[in-house]
Image (cartoon, rainbow, N blue to C red; front, side, top):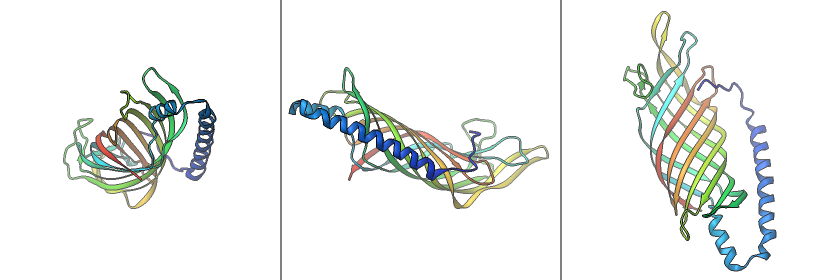
Length: 254
């Protein structure tokens, strides 16, 4: 991705997003409470099953991701891209309680639009430079490693239950927020004067823009997650870290 943020107005953006989400959440909850006296106890039980929202949780599991670190050099016409060629990676996430913004009935279950806040942490170790392939890198002696912690207000669409009486849902979500990112090492660049190896990244944490994209199939406390994580660190170079893959995790409620 060529997008690069020189400045991230993080506090202004986050306050605005949280204010809007809170306002919509309160309005949706007031509407649900106002309707409650008109419903029978049995209907309330069904509605709660249909509009299943999760409490705050810690998610732990394992994923298989391909992470790619991208960096520019003022003397090179193209980016250097270093990947791990795909590797196991831990899933470690904290999630706030899910809040409903709105919902509507479907033929089977409900569709719910809501929000919560997600915090995710991960490490990366990329050591295979993309030379003549867009996916499979080669070991040319370059390497960039590090890690990040990202926090993102997340908007989601949740559909289900997919089977009567079962806690089975589809969930698609997108989140964007700030992150602390640390990644450093070396990368190979092609310049008009020839191939050079240059230091990239920073040995100290820097502010980054964090995006999280998830498509989940949830069964009780388990879920399968097709995911994408994208980070744009600030600095003198235009860099990014992209991670795509699939994972299996278990949700521990608080």
